Amino acid sequence: MTGIQEQQLSEATRRLNVPEEELALAAVRDLLAHREADFDRAAAHVLAKNRELYRRLA
Image 1 (cartoon, rainbow, N blue to C red):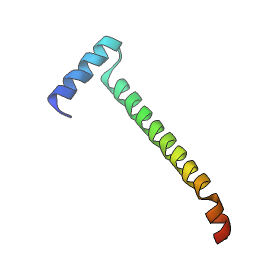
Image 2 (tube, helix red, strand yellow; image 1 turned 30 degrees about the vertical axis):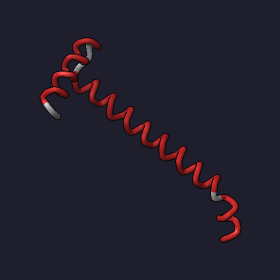
Image 3 (spheres, rainbow, N blue to C red; image 1 turned 90 degrees about the horizontal axis):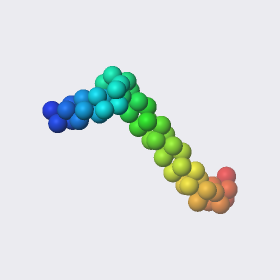
């Protein structure tokens, strides 16, 4: 983490009145949840798009 990022984190935690660790954990959880949702959405799109091809190959 750069010095600027550390300063931004400190400012955000003061503004939100939460510990730095709690804010960082919330950010990581949010990032992981979005990545999982993005992957699921992309996988569903690919499967739907190629459903007929998969059926013929089966």
